[in-house]
Length: 279
Length: 251
Image (tube, rainbow over all chains, first blue to last red; front, side):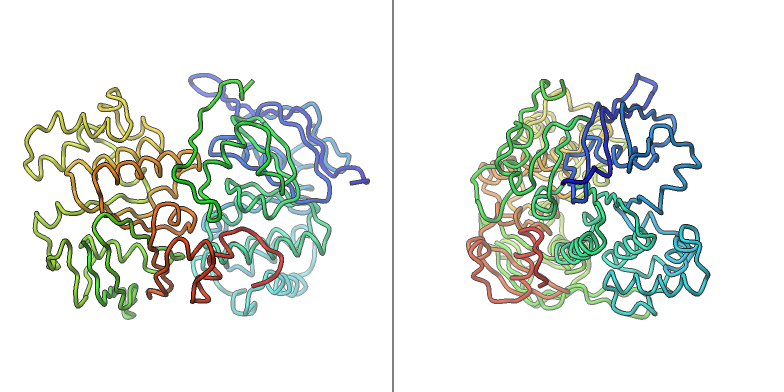
């Protein structure tokens, strides 16, 4: 990466005050992102989704986001007003959520929802928006875009729903896409189709992708670089192909605990959690 | 131990019948852990439920321990096999303590020495005595799945049916539960059927594995065949390739 990074994050923390004290969901995370596919791996509660949301200014109240630096294309995100965020979200950066069932509007057709993004962010006319939505459905490899355009979300299968979500997020051609477990709810064979679509779009449009997942196999084979999170911290950063030679004990334990088709073991390694990892 | 010949399950939902399982046949030997793999809608869980008698099914043979079982199971039939479900959050009663949950099957089957049996079951699955009077919401996902396994094993059934027992768990917790099951099946010489969408999990625990697609049994292979790729069906090959991770070339 010779060019300046698209996104720079230094010392990002997210805290949620609660009845029994403050929960620190993300603690002092720092990383930068260029035109690449960056994976974020961790188990439940490691703060990976919260970090993704913080990057889009979507941490719900009363959560507090603090950072020394958080800039997107040189723009300081820590000083963004709600209005500024609205200008960024959707148009410049967007997020694909885990489950299409909960993220699509159940009472609007798929086509209406995709073309709405177009009308809002690109300020195109209704006709033009419809044409672009159909093209986009074609781009995410939906076989009969004309038909699917007029369907409601409950009439879609899981894989189709996830493709529709991706179409909706990509139609405004954002520079940064954050995909939060985009394939976890899908069957393995469909999962690879969706990954291939994401991969093509990243290559063709030069988009940056943050790929959040708990699945080491998928992240290791799909991303360029990986951040491993544990208890709200980034404990290790490594090249995706080198996941199996990771240095941090947590990463090594994760790799060892995953059953592998190629390396059969009598017993899976279990993890002894070290409080040192949180320091 | 379990013989299934030409098993079919059809659900009648509205006007259109849904044929969830179509003519599936296999045998499971005593002490074997048999695996069933497939994608969503392949009918893998339905096969398991049909064996347990939880859904109505038709078959030319459905025999457990050499004896054919009727559609309506007797108490003795039901004692032969126990079920562990996918979601430990949904399969434990939220208003019952671990003690209540483990006690119930013993009371139903009028077993003696309930107190000692409950204490032993808790120790068997690696929980502490202090967990005995907790409610499910006070336990982690892995601990809840341990309770579900303890409940299934408390009547000493010869057969255990597991439906995606670890797919709601993190990998580190999954490793603990899979290891626990590996130890218990040896200690109690269990015959079991493990259903999962995860090829690596099934190949880790099972020697013989059935591949299902759209209600049909595609083929039965061994774990070694899966690893070496010595399989006959195209669909199995696609599944193996997909579960090895992302590849650029389109299939």
